[in-house]
Structure formats: C-alpha cells, structure tokens
Length: 114
Image (cartoon, rainbow, N blue to C red; front, side, top):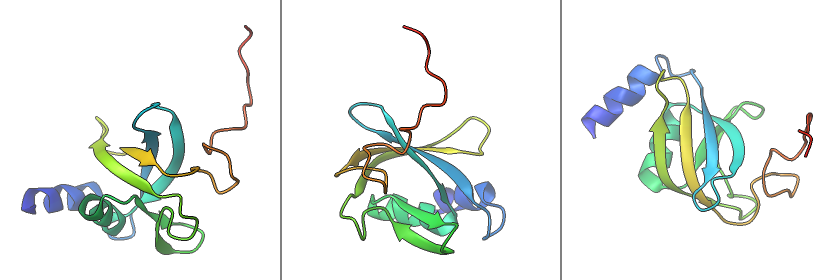
C-alpha cells in the first residue's frame, strides 16, 4: 500500500489537483461518464470499490449513487501512459447519467453516414 500511496501522491502533486476519470462499463465497454478525482477520491475508490469523485460544482467528495442508488462497483482503475488520466471499469447499477440516460454521452454532435 505504501507504493500505491506514493504513486497517488506523485500523480496528484498537490492536494487540490484533479485528474480526469473516464468511467467504462465492465460488460458492454460503453463509456458511461467523465468525472474528476483528487487523491482522497482515488484512495476511497480503491479501498471501498465504490466509484468516488470530486464534485467541482459542490467542492466536495461524492460517491456515485449515494443519492440516486445508481452505484458503480469498481473492477479496476488504470492510469494512462502519460500519467494524467484514469480509466475506471465498473459494473453500473441503474443509469450513469443524472438526466436518466444510461450514459452521459447521449448527445451526438456529428453522426457518421451509414
């Protein structure tokens, strides 16, 4: 755990730093959402296996599903090659998006021709 803590601290150089976390469904591999983690959110996610993020609008930690019941059970967290983003693989309970959509990515801007 000491190596992990050192990795987290080197990743997030100061306590206010945030890192993007791309959340993907374990079974379908669909991208569910993008959120942000600070060191504490990442540590809680790794220790509890419940996806925990930093709310930029509320300036507080939030466990995905704490109010909606739409939890994300974490299978894995992987750091990207540049060390500046995370991929969080989850089993989603209910929908991922606060709008009621299954994924936060439901508003196409460009649609490729068939």
